[in-house]
Length: 124
Image (tube, rainbow, N blue to C red; front, side):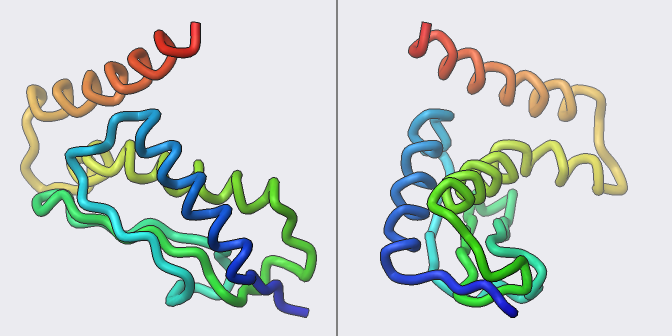
């Protein structure tokens, strides 16, 4: 039996996505949060991005084969997972590139560390 998400679920998802974008300081990305349109029915959510354009779409599926029980905690977990995908997008992009320099990887690597440290400093 497929799982389904409601408008209320999407409101939670959107709020969590926005919370984690803010937490990690991902303001240099233009992010659309959408309910529906996830192509792989095995996934409850997805993050699609264009690194060069700094654009991303984070989607919560309306229906998926994950199972019939999808809790609010699962929705929150899906949101932070997809923002985590965005946080690491540049590193993944570079890893998949045919020509990449050590300096590019180091810059992307340290960008992630700086974002995590900024978040942790605010929490401590």
